[in-house]
Image (cartoon, rainbow, N blue to C red):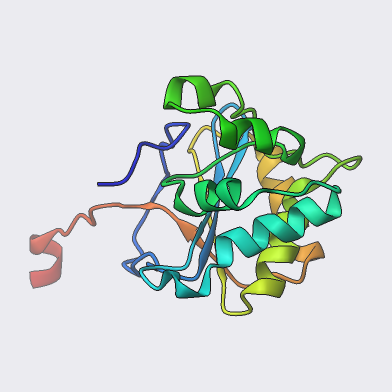
Length: 178
């Protein structure tokens, strides 16, 4: 069982039946309150240890050195996180979901500190096979969606998956038989 995500995402419907990838994914979650969350999944093959390498690269950008225990904690964290990098050490040092929820304020995407762009950059540098998936709440406002898509374009992520719920197709048998 997966741990519950920090925000509930009510995805829009589509008719595509392409399944979600199970590994080598960077999932960007867009919550209805316009917060942005991330999840890195390299599947059952944890020997490559992408997650701690990505965190180390991100920490290096901000002159933050993570301990081996913090890197292990980040590696095994079971769901998405929306923690600004300057609060990541505190987040990883905190035990319990209720205590950690305080730090889940969303990944900054503003022009002064665009951490989402850096996470995407480092994730793609460390794992060139990573695929970006975007999971947005059906009530997410357009400006944040556009901002995330602009960031993907800026980082040359021109191919990504949009995760939706499968909508049942209505078939009118009488029309088909005519």
